[in-house]
Structures are given as C-alpha cells and as structure tokens.
Amino acid sequence: MDTDTTHDPGRSAPEADARVRVLLVDGDPARVGAIAHILGEAGIEVVTAYRGATALARLADETPDLIVVGDGLGDGPAVELIPRLLGRTRVPILALAAHLDDRLVVPLLDAGADDVIPAASRAPALLARIRALLRRTVPATPPSTGPLPDGLRVDPGRHEAFVREQQLTLTPTEFELLVLLALRRGDVVDHRTLLRAVWPGRPDADPDLLRAHLTHLNAKLIGAGHPGLRNVRSTGYALRVAGGDPIRS
Image 1 (tube, one colour):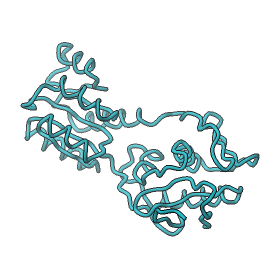
Image 2: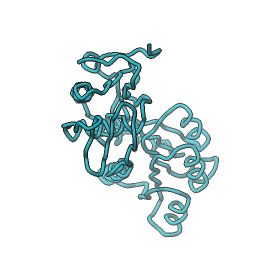
Image 3: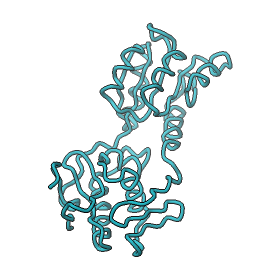
C-alpha cells in the first residue's frame, strides 16, 4: 500500500498556484517597489531581496522560476552574485544595468546572466524579456524516456505513446503531461510544475483544467492496461507502477 495520501485524479482538484515566481534582487528600494508593482500587476509572484546574502538564503526556501538581479546590493556586485546564484539554481537570470554599455553588459553575461536590460526599462519591455526567458526553459522536444515500467513507451520526437503494443490516442496537452510524468519515472511531479510545463508563462492557468486533462489521461492509460496515475494530496501526480491498485476514473 502506498504511504502517500492519494486520490482519484477525477475527484480531487490540484491545490496549486500556477503563477510565475520571480526572485527580485536589488539594493534600491524604490526600484524594487516599482518592478514588484509591474510584476504583480502582470500576475507574477515576487520574492524580494536587497542583499546578495539574502537572495542566496531565499533560494533555500523558495523555488523561483526566474531571478532578476540589479546593482547596489551593498554586499558585493551583481557580477559576483550571479555565479553564486547559479551554483544553487539553474533558473534564468535577467540582469539590470544602468546602461547597455559593453563595459557593463559583457561582464554580466560572462558571469552567467541570460539577458541584460536597462534598469529603467518600461513595463512592456521588462515583461517581454521575462516571458522570453521563461519560454527558453521549456524544452521543445524532451529527451526520450527510454523503457518504462508496465510497458509504457513515450517518444516525444514522434509524438507517440504506447502501452506495450497499443498506441495511446492523446491530445497535445495529455501528451505533454505524460512526457513530464514519464521523465520522472514514478516520482511525484508537483502541481505547479505540471501547470507551468503545459502552459508556460500563463499565470491564469486553471488548476481545474489541469485536473480534467489528467483525468482523461488516467482513463486512457488504464484502458490500455497501464496502472494509471496516482495523485498525492496537496502535492502532485505521478505514474503509478505495478504493485499499486489502479485509480479508476
């Protein structure tokens, strides 16, 4: 018996926040307030830090989708902080520079920033750069999952999935969810990751819609002879492997 608390995907809505989460690191309180307001108005959750040490500590408790790094931190320049951040996370980093001058931009890029924009950028440009960086974090063609338990085989390149010799007829969304779950090979994928993977950059993604897609995917897996999915209450979903009772929709 599973030690997790599990549910039928068709009966329990995911308790998830699909909003993008940004860690904003800058030593200028006025700029932090202005950028946080822009991001908040766009439905983006903001976690702030005014010092590099605080930002590093935040990473122990938070799981940001992107980091925005400014200057004037007081405990070291951004070019020194960025490599330390990358030592703890692999999310995109957007650096803010006073001017787009090579003397400022090149060191930031060499330090590991994915993009650099002027600190005084207007809201549309800032949000566009953030959306662009978030899109890059979603692989266009995930790697092949290889052999999986219970006869499941997923080929992202061909956009095909089989349970033993039976091909599954899946919608694009169901297929993307299955790829992500298959890559975890039975480990739980949290609700927020599932929402972000299927609808990247969509802070308004509906958890109930995710539940509906997972319910249909679960039914198709079981119909083909696979044990289906398991839903860990308040946490996420995983492929159920042989040995557990199938979750019937």
